[in-house]
Length: 237
Image (cartoon, rainbow, N blue to C red):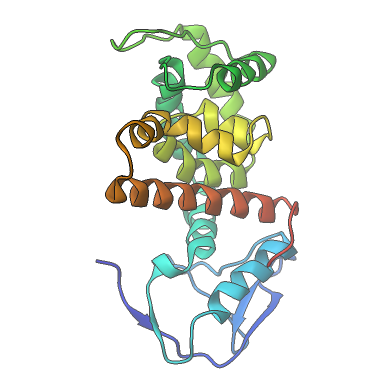
């Protein structure tokens, strides 16, 4: 169960944190400390402002958990997990890439979207084997090596966002295509959950399944927003 905290600060501002030119939210003038004791500080002014806004949104005296601070959790993961040891995240993502759901063709998938993703992947030097069957697919060694090289070139913020998206989608290629604007958000989530959406269309509304899909899609959207803020592609709301 997530640990409960209570708002104790009066004012949230954004200011310099540390000596590297980074910024972060300041609670009554003090930087936020992450679980391992590191200060919450980022290079993107847009992300710093969005992080501060999360802390402002907590009502005075209200209780909250880390789950209420989505961007803060992702920034914390990047600072305390990925930056000190990015190899661990690369290995986890690589495992999904070797057994990628997108490599198992399904009648529920949009063939035009999957073809676009495969064409983009080929341009990156990524040539996975594909199958129409259900048995586990063994990828060629060359593909595994190409994935290793590709992941090593990604920015920490990209690894952070993928660390959220990939397990939800059961795919590495699909979220990679999403973060590189090869597919739209709607195309990505409908392809990721093609079988589930097909089930809803065939059998009618299933509130539990619809709620699950909504939660997954919200988590994907949050990760994409984190990345865009980190890259300075959008302004804080």
